[in-house]
Length: 394
Image (cartoon, rainbow, N blue to C red):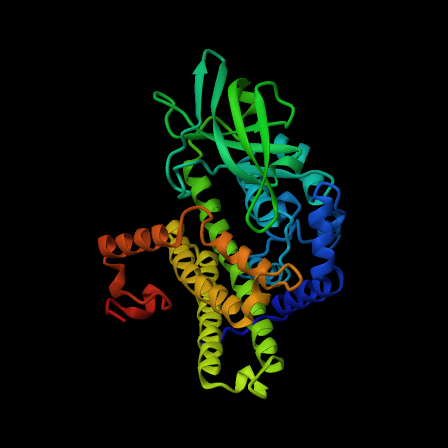
């Protein structure tokens, strides 16, 4: 099945592709890496294009686009190796803020987040707790009318440039569940340790030393936020898979161009049968990765009941395909594949980083397989809706 885009979706995709082709080529990306995203004006251009408002609901001042539209944007970002923390901020933290925040919190922060003058980041990942739907080791303990926050977060992308940090924390009984707290970067007791991810993007480890907070510092009301966290973290994994699919496609195309030009024994490498077979396998991987991303986005927009299972499905499939495409691209480029002069090495690092984000590919494969066995979902079509099956197995 080939997905046919609507006019609006095609317009979104073409505008992103054209903008990045003109404004974010490989050389400009290298300049952004050297300058650091804090000094980059690219975020303001993202806001000017309306992309920061794309996933937000209309009541929050956004455009109200679905997962498919956001996925198309992330695929273009992957093709151009965008290092700005768009997925972490605009596609996870901002929608979470809009969905879970109180009205006065949305009024105070969302206008600045949408116009690009402010940034917010969700600090959720922790060492040893890779999956988004597991409990957090960071603890928030109530003491009368105050909260005491302690713990740490690992490799939070974009934390160093954020104006507001959304920190998830577990709360012991009788409160139970998880809460989300709003922290400014200069909050007493908060320490940031800058780091770089494998793909070159900026991140930071966060440490919370008995930070004193109140209910006013909590996003939303004093209720368990685990369910809403799971939803947006699962969607974030799907968007990362879209980004990886774009990087895979670009890498496959660049590799095909290279072996057509590079000659050995008097003829282009592409003329050798073994090379042609590898290129074909890489192309199949790219098609399969895009297909599972499209399926995941369509099911998110349809309101799937178990978003984390869906995210693990996409993460598992795209992770396995990305590993193969990245390895084959480097091998077919030979020694040139590991030099900084060609973008191949940067794509390899991007896809390798994706394969370890929020849990390894093996971990997500195991989680998805276990879920299918327990629910007997392996016997039901992943593409047809339940009403069309009428109780039969597809």
